[in-house]
Image (cartoon, rainbow, N blue to C red):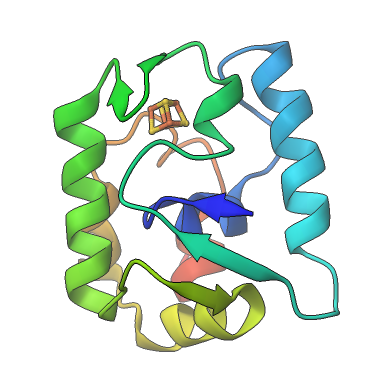
Amino acid sequence: MRLRPHHLLCTQSYSGKGYDDAFVENMNRLVKELRKKEPVSVEIVFSTDELCAHCPNMKGKNFCKDNQKVISYDKKVTEYFHIKEKTYIYQDITKEIREKMTPEMLEDICGSCEWYQISACRKILCGKS
Ligand code: SF4
């Protein structure tokens, strides 16, 4: 599965809400796969990915309606967690992210995201409610 860096966070804290039915249906399928106990390989891409593919905000390859904002989320995730454009085991890299994440880092990365207040981001990603 191809994932852009900041989606390593969204796929952990997603709690069933999204932009529209097609997005939610796709997201449900992807997170079900990713949240399995068995290791799942994910290819990190600095571009649009399989979540974006069914998102109403995707306007073209590497072109999100909120491109500037989402590229900044990706950049912060790659810097804080030293994420490269390569293949990871999802369970390992997300565990590493949760272990390193602080509330301040999460606020810095995701503070301007419309889902930050709605989804379980703080609770799941740094154990803060
Ligand atoms: S809002 Fe942008 S970055 Fe997020 S899933 Fe949609 S197209 Fe991708």
